[in-house]
Image (cartoon, rainbow, N blue to C red; front, side):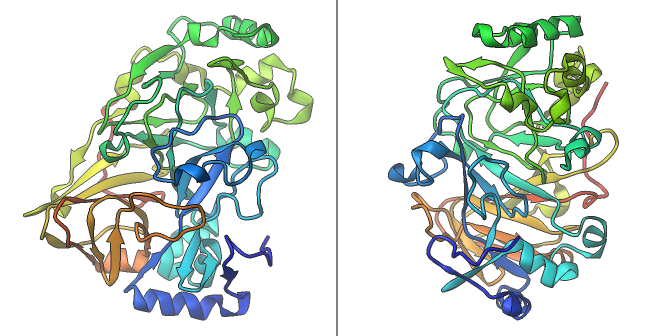
Length: 419
């Protein structure tokens, strides 16, 4: 629901002018829109302080809301936080002295921005990405599959990770992620962890395995799979949903309330251990080949690479045979310029260097104050992607951008070589 409130002191473009404003900005950007930073706090987490937010602004929403440890990109998804401000999780389009909701811009020109098929199927941009930046590990948790999320009026959430070298100058406290459950784990073992919730550490990590996180690599995490992300700053293309359930009761001495386990489950099931555990994809959790079936190494795309520029797949692969999202990392050496084509729209974030994308400037900020606009994030429309758009490095260091795509947008995407 649209609010008449402003956004960080800026006036919203009136609904009656959204269509005209979107068309003008697309014309000026040659099919590309500039977006403003979208910051999201989490009351139960500890900011890792690598996402370039000014040091005094990590608690800009108030101490009671928790610290800001996420920046969302090209999002039409609400952050599922208690006490959220009206626009939390939503991206905005920069219109100079005013801003407009990204989702309203899409609704005003859906075929141009995201393509006819995506709009007809979802009536929105159905994915988003984020920088997730925490000081230490977070609780072992899962995201519901579509059928389970639907029980509470939500959508399921597969997600993915990429550990961008540019965003990880330090490891922080625990650069390892627990994923899945050890082969041979039984549901009775996990029930005991739930029964021991109020005894301190419920021991769920004793049933899992941690993997050391490696810069420049990633993972594809299906819904229903337990994972406890570690302390590298993570770029996370994912489905446009914020459902989750925490299975770990104590993290770094901080108590995790039972409410964060069952927040996206029917109320009458909040003490039903069989139902709660039944939302996990058991076979994927106890998969003896978990790493081989979910780990992702970058793959160069020769079709979009050439002299002075390299495009790499960093997130790829299907979940149960369906492509929900994918992502690429484009690197241009100083002075390089290229025109590339994609099979669909994408959200772009610049992580190193300066340059141009069509007529819009790109610049990687060193520090961002809360509410301040930047020149590092854009949305590449479906129209521009299909026609081809130009990227140029105008600086003295590599220009590096990460961009993520929506479902079914790449017919020739690599697949994970699963067993």
